[in-house]
View (spheres, rainbow, N blue to C red):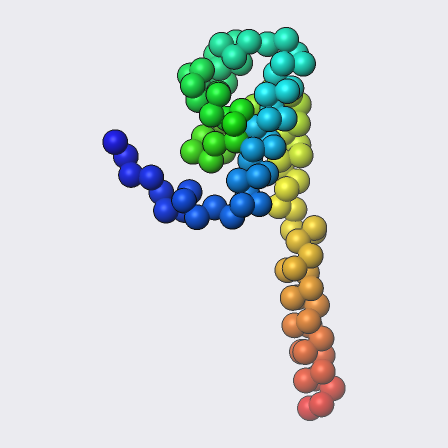
Length: 109
């Protein structure tokens, strides 16, 4: 049996909650489309037990499987926008502060 990753054992609760919600939302999307577990598993090219894990938000399911499930419900564009650098406010703030410090040094020279 493969060892469980320490990274999986130390996931922040916010992450596990978000994955649980994503899985539940994907399960609801499947059910609203009146698709069986078997049908979706075949379309995702995974086993039914893996799809059940996905629908529970299991972090051991690959990101590619989650991404394909999003594609199946035409929501893959939202995935592409998740880490948009233009919306990374912490990094932008850091860059503004660094630029301000450089500007202050240039004025004092």
